[in-house]
Length: 180
Image (cartoon, rainbow, N blue to C red; front, side):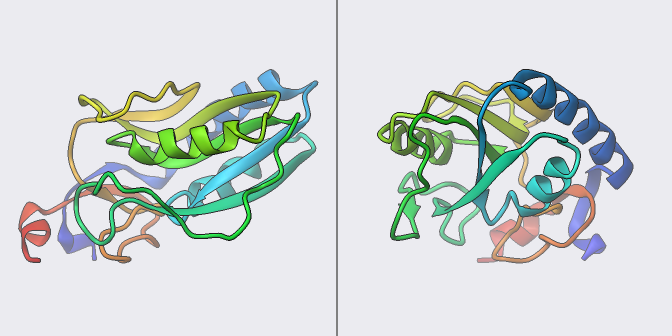
């Protein structure tokens, strides 16, 4: 799988150092609050697991399964929620964790959906934020890394459900994106 990458952007030690920093910020910001973490599946799975182990606070964890890429290299713009019931976040301080902020469609839809439950607050944390014009603007409170507008995989991020298990983040070779 390493051969499918143009280059590695962030190796495992770099990711873990950045997670230490983000966890310290979150721990400080939420130390007196009633924290509920909402993980956006499946891409955030590795990020969420590693980040939450670094946050020494009581918290509630819930997940949302959403899709907007539908097997393509770009978001379709259509965000599909795959579960029957939404997490109970009424009156709680919510932190949304997602793998990547790209078009903004997914995070905007998740935030708007959770706001209907009237949480006390909502903040957003992403591992990666692409430097690009977004279809929908989304404010982020915590960002792991800013990256160029390239297709990345690894550490939970996939292309057609492959590469999630890589312990690092890399840029997928362009010819693999064009093959289908």
